[in-house]
Image (cartoon, rainbow, N blue to C red):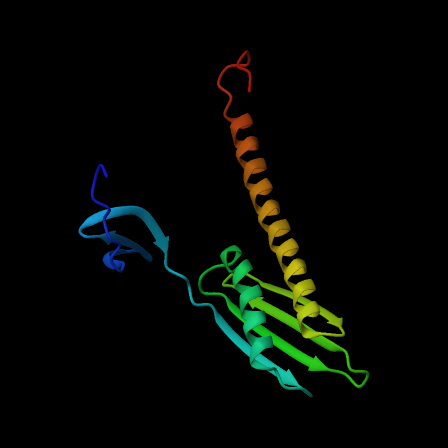
Length: 155
């Protein structure tokens, strides 16, 4: 055996900076920084049905996938309702400081409805962010064109 194999000790928090944790073994840095999970504000509302714990956990898991697309102060409101035919309607409202994003879907199960709602929300927020980015680029391009000093300069 060439060298001693170091035994792994439990991870210890050595630094906390702006929502990140750095962990170490025996005083040496491991080289990985793990982001602290944000806690999203979530409200649940059930109409004519009860949300089981498994369904609640599944909804929270799916919402955490799109949590990074929104501000950290966003409020997620989830409404689950059951109609007379046995279909589940899931509606998710996400309110930011700027705007409100909403999606709704009706299927036979809560899980299928939340999957479709998450896909709709992701599409809406990506479209909105692309639109803002394009408008910003277009504005910068028009300012750049108006500031041309020499007519022979190419942009």
